[in-house]
Image (cartoon, rainbow, N blue to C red):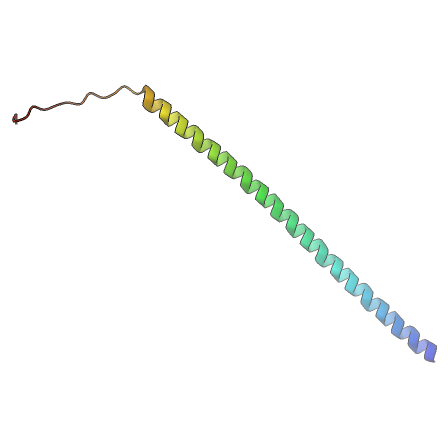
Length: 83
């Protein structure tokens, strides 16, 4: 009877330890997956930022070229005292 009681206790302890280990493994898997998704999101954000900065630089360069090649407008001067 004593051996049977001890076996039950050992089985219960082993089952509890197994359940705890499985729960800990699920938690670790979840943390790894969350970190992986975070890294993917950070990489996507960095890529989009680089693309935006490149576009802004190209737009500034185009605007500067257009301003340099634009024909200056003639300013109409008025005479002093003429109304």
